[in-house]
Each structure stands twice: as structure tokens, then as C-alpha cells.
Image (cartoon, rainbow, N blue to C red; front, top):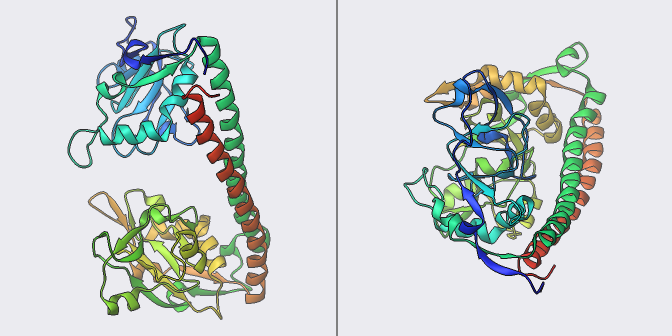
Length: 404
């Protein structure tokens, strides 16, 4: 441990939610940061807007370049929406759901503080200290004021922050590579099939209902501590099934059999507040159970999903998934979605009416082989990213225990 390090209270090292430092004219330009612009993966601000001070002078949080923004409302806080402010026009303004922490110059390095606040243990502790009603729970200011951290000299803080920044840069490159591989799948699709809507002369055009043997909605039963693993909207993401937040739902034996997912079933999101997410789809396969730590178990799905069981001798689920996620499929989904109470919805009738170009099956199968090769690369990158995640967590722990 560094001999001159000391344990210090955060309230003595930062100004929490500071006021505007100097008066501004109504036409002065300032930066604006909405909550959506805070990227939890990179702990950075993805985009900023330029606005007049008159347009943001009331009802917004103010901050300056270099400050730390922390989302205080659920689920943004739990999702890790924390970032250091980097803006051209200072001061900046943003959501009222931000806490602002301004480190005292020369005592606490901003990057050192950022990495400290990004620790899982800090986030979990903050989640436990939230106040308010369901859906409107917030982290109170005194949570941050009462935090204690190990405080080495400022030069040592900067060395530690630079080491953690390097790991974050490596993690970012892996995530970027994964994003590029996601795009590669669609690029291969267009290379092989072009714009599917323009190939109608040589390919059959079929309504989705004619290439699906069955559409079925999922269970409306609520999750319980015991039950069958049930996939929900959050599990259908980025064209794949994510089992990191898996719920159990009790169902009767007959409902379990009726809703049991089989290899190759396609799951569609049927309702969402974001129209671009309606119709998002992913393929169920046996790897899902293995990844979730429940190999051999039956999986079912919730009512806000639609299961499509395809006629495999006509169409590949991989081809159909990419068509539905591509521009032509997205346009068809948006045109058939309906709005109710701020939610966008698509039902089995509208989904079944979507026209799908059906290329020769051997061409579809060649596409599947290429996609599987890309999937193998993605798995390799995910494995490397998992190793970097573990390294990052280890270095964070050691850093704030005085061992780095």
C-alpha cells in the first residue's frame, strides 16, 4: 500500500450538484446532454447538442467540462450510466435525473473518481440505498457524500486511472469488433441477396403466414422464485438471445408443453414503446439453455413475444431473421405496427401478412454457413471480452484497496 494514502470521505473531496458558476446571457450557447447520450459501456457521452441558454435555463441540471455525471433514477443507475463530461460549450445542461460530482482540484482526479464509482460494489450499494416508489426510485445525494475511498497522492491517482483507462480502451476495441461483426452478417446478406424486394422476378414471394407452420403468443403468468425458465423482451436483443436476466414462471404441464421452445423457433417482440424494437427477433437453440446454466431444461416465453415455428423445408430461420432485421423487413414491420397508449404493437395477423422473398434453399443454406463462420469469430471476441471484463474488475478492486 502507498504509505501516504489515506481513507477519505467523498463529501470532503467533491462538490455535489454545484450551481451555475457565472451568469449567462439568453443567447449564449451551451452544451446539452440528454440521458440517452450517456454510454454505460464506455462511461462517455456519445453525443451533445448545442442550445441557447434561454432554452435550458429552467428545469435542467447544470455542469462543467470535466465533471462526473451519474444517473440517479432507476434503471439508469443500475445500468451504469456514469460519464465524465467532455463538452465544447461549457457550461452544459442535461437531465434532472443526473447527479453531478465536481472533484476538488488537486485533491481528487476526475478519472480516478470515475473508475471508483463504476465499481459493481458501489453500484449495488447505491441500488440498496435508493428511495421513492416503484419505477421512480432514485439514489439520494447523501449516498455519494457518505462514500469513503482510499486517496493516494494526486500523481498516484493519475497513474492508477491511466492503467484502468488502458484496460477500458482494450474492452472498447473488443466491443467495436463485435459491432463490426454484427454489421458483417447484414453485409453478407446484401452481397448474396442484394435488395430482396428487387429480386421478385426470380424468387417466390410468400406471406410470412405461408412459411410458418404456427404463430403462438406466450404466457401471461408472472415470474416466481420457482418455475420454468421463460424468455422475455429483454432476452431478445441484438438478433440473439441473452440469458443474463432470466426469470422463472410457474405454468401447468399442458401450458409448458404448448409453449416449449424447440430448436430453430423464431421469437418476435410484439410490443414496445420504441417502434424500432417491435418485431426484433432471435432464434432459439439448445445453446441458450447451456449458456444459462440450465442445460437440458425446457424453456418457454412470455406473452409479449410471438413464437414462429417455420417450415424448415422452405425457409431458413437464419435467412428470415436477417431479412426481418434488415431495411426491407423493418419497413414492413413499421407499416403494420399499431399504436396504443404509447406502445407500438404487432399481432400475428399483421406479422403473417408481411411479404417475404424466398430465395432457393441451397442459396439460403450457403448464407447460413457463412453466418456460422462469423458467429464463431463473435464467440472468440466475446471470450476475449469476458477475460478483459474479469481483468478490469480485478484491477479496480486492487486499485481501490491500495494494491495496484
